[in-house]
Image (cartoon, rainbow, N blue to C red; front, side, top):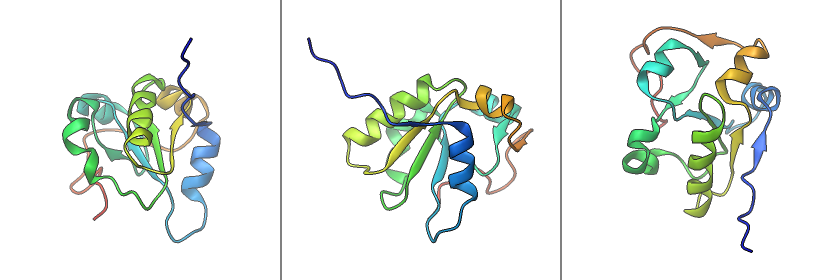
Length: 123
């Protein structure tokens, strides 16, 4: 029976440490939830790229930086992670447990509509 390779995953604590760490090209945290979900609560510094438009917009994501994918629980971001890895992005990982785990861990969040320029991919 064929079994696909598991999607690489990191804990919310590891994701936060990587995002906060030193380095010339820290990872990007890409949130694939829908705009109303992102406006409700999100990790600080996310790039907002809802799964509903992901297929049209994924090429906006850099291939020369690590990407950490997040959603509410890890399911949608797992799909996006697998897609990017299959399509040439070399370093992508799913944030296990998603925003639910991020909140439970007490990590920094923002609430409310995205501010001007917030949530945009670099470039």
